[in-house]
Length: 428
Image 1 (tube, rainbow, N blue to C red):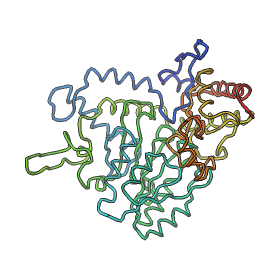
Image 2 (image 1 turned 90 degrees about the horizontal axis):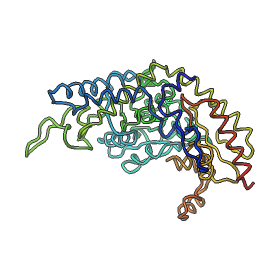
Image 3 (image 1 turned 180 degrees about the vertical axis):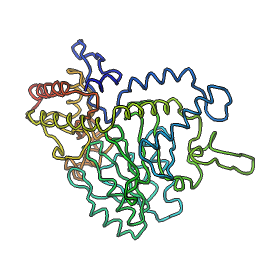
Image 4 (image 1 turned 90 degrees about the vertical axis):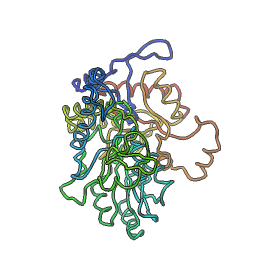
């Protein structure tokens, strides 16, 4: 798939090693951030000649910038297969989108309950935790949601659950949740569903609407920096009526129609929720990335990345002392969490970088409850973690996350590096 690789910036970059030599960099940390598409960088440079503040400006550049910014909403709605009444609100990232949604949900229900799951990123836990009564849906040892437990909780709260907040794909194991089946279950008991799409958006074609309306997704969010447009923009998509309640959480320029000494008339959505000068460059980058993904075809991307995943899983099984977590999961994006017996996760990541020019991520990936469960840690273990000021001693995992530009040859180089690490550093 050299044609995919040719679309991405930096795939031939050389980086320094600990011995002073240089080597071609391998990036297996795409779940955190993807590099930009070349088309994105070209369009940003082109657009910079016409970039200006949007809305209410009659200058040519202001009108061009406004058109790019506003027309992007329809492109995004089409890209995610949005429902008829859905709108797009631009934010900095998925985290801000979820926080914004938390201010809108349950505003009329003081005893509101929000359900999340044990597999969520902190960004889909903490915004809900400090505003509502939270309950957590059980998962199995690999984070696959227990649908019976979900239905049991929906029943037990007698209609008080107003939203179920769940990830589409885990950023730790890659497991893909059956979100449309979950949506039908939520709607059966009067709850809405929010889906964190940050880890799925560049790897699989999604659609908010479904042939069966009961399975429609009510709200989604995602970030451009995980889909080849790292320019600080994110998106919240959802039903206009549900998002229109209350005053904006960010107040200021662009959010109002009229301000006097006595009253304020807030603007209509989505502008009411986009206070301040917006990130027009980020929106331009996002739309360029969407156009590129549409050109490639996400079905092709998904197929290729599954081949990478299968190849890597089989290759790593041959490495002595390696432990792959949740390797038997079939329906997942191309993510592999692992550890090497006798070598700390942070040492594995550091050695891969310093001695082999391979970038991975290690730790708990902003999903500590989930990782703690994968590692079979109990409450006593976790308390000891908190007491220890040396963060390098804290348990965690090493994570490989692949993207459309990665190659089988890169996986071969990774396997060789891990085998060398086992020989040199494993104390087992």
